[in-house]
Image (cartoon, rainbow, N blue to C red; front, side):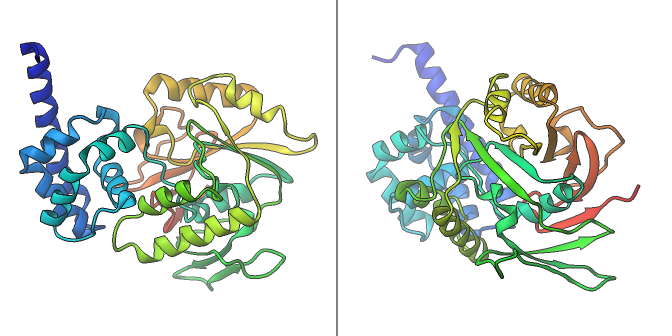
Length: 335
């Protein structure tokens, strides 16, 4: 029998789910997925569904994660009423699967923003990404790029072997250096590594693409195919462990410039863990390149004002550009 305290906690969790999904339906989903907006609004007004989702740990209740898991398990991408019926029928499976998963956005388009930062670094490079998921952002030298510049000729970049099956399109302003990096060693780290060759991991990564994002789905699928043909090692490791970065970099061959990236990772870490990770990178002497929201850390070496909805591309805290969080546009900073 549930105690009054436990019962109150349960009701608080149900109310938290309703509030969280209502915010998502209003503020986040409409610009990207009308289906997710409909589902989230439906969840917020459905007590039975909120009770099911309240069984999931609070750190795993994010709407994009829950919706992705349901789609991966077979939920119909139809009206909320159909999704609701499916969820209630498969509640135990959804709770179990979501409880062991986490959001692992692996967007190769971020390499279009990363590339100019890597171009400022003398090579050849030894490249480590913390929070790598399946390592799709560890192969910027294997992709093709099409940069559209409003006041200058467009820039086309292809690997030496020819046009890549993954072509990244981005808008760019400013005189950013644009060239493919020379990467001779690459390694990823993630709390729960994903493999491009594992069917379950692949299904989950594809489910994380929101309904309607067709171009993104095709891009990630092509990047997964590329990573499967040319495997990338992603080690299991906790980003908050100060020994993780030096341990992995110790396996890098001599003669390479060590570069560590944390693309989009920091907002998912508690503040203390972020500081430990940044400090550990600095202690190794590696160059830190990242794409972060303004509030992610206080290591900026100059004033930054990216504006709403944009991140800051930086090298060791020195701002290089303001960018779309997923890499679709880049404003290179002068000076």
